[in-house]
Image 1 (tube, rainbow, N blue to C red):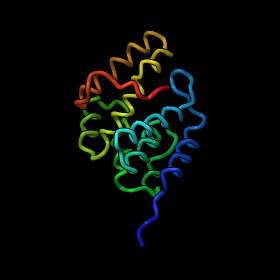
Image 2: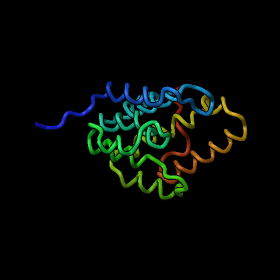
Image 3: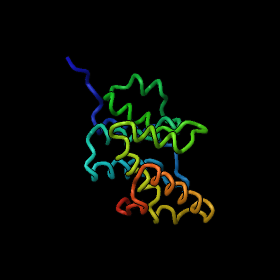
Length: 158
């Protein structure tokens, strides 16, 4: 009998619970970002593995879940690979991070949605000028490394 994997609603509930106490740089509930990224992946034609990874894309990096949990989780190998590809390592050069994303099937679409929401002008407007300037340059650099369009899309509202 094939293994039973978590459904997308179960992954969403898990991610919302794991990230519940966290807020973004503007003080908004972090789960709003996860929802926007998952929605962005779905509207870009992403499949269930990519949508699940969108819900979990920051879970390890933000210490909401552990890598041990991910290894044992009832998720597809592809979802796990995408989450691992999207998890930045301390001190990792952006070029290495981008190369790992590009080398992992399905990860680029999730990162594209993540960047689109992070770089949303309405979302950035809530930040102080130095932070907004720094993040705008950081996101543009990552889009360039990944070969994505220079301008982020604005369909993902706050």
